[in-house]
Image (cartoon, rainbow over all chains, first blue to last red; front, side, top):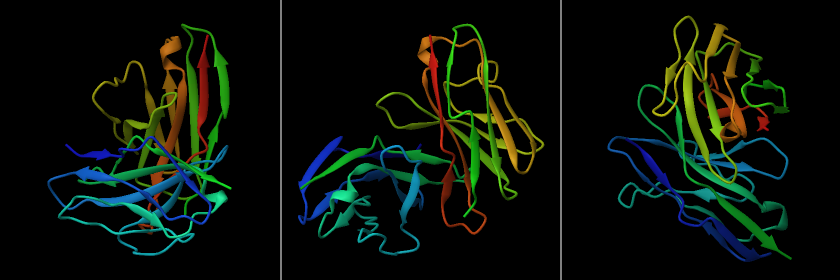
Length: 109
Length: 114
């Protein structure tokens, strides 16, 4: 069975500082990894997927199969980045998502 | 990406009653997913709904409690039956984008059972 672990429930950084949100997964095959973000009073929305290898809003995430990690990084955090971030994994034929417990990021002025 | 309309956005219900949540997608999709997000917790998959077949439920969720309908490729409903305060959660539907760009979520239904 697949599992996603986000060890930090809360994370605070100052504006302009680098930020890294950790995500580790367990799955025996080749998973597809995502980062979803939920801003206050908004619906859950896709931020990144490892297949696309894009940088969205300055965020990047690299899939490290050796360490089974998919950490989310941004070199200079902005106050508007404050939100709940969920790491998620899709695997198998059913294609449903398995979510981590989420990290609430607060960027301080 | 697909656009999902989910309703109601919130409701306060008496224990013992049932609530049906609707999700309408603006494009045809094979699978629709229903999730629950309990207060302060992450999303947990309830079931996967395919058109024309019975939904597949995850461990801990049963059809009698959470009956699902999927009459066509753009619509699904989830019913929360015989509600108790422990059912107070946000319920969300989701679909996988046809272009394979990820998953889109509805805005959620915030349910409070009193």
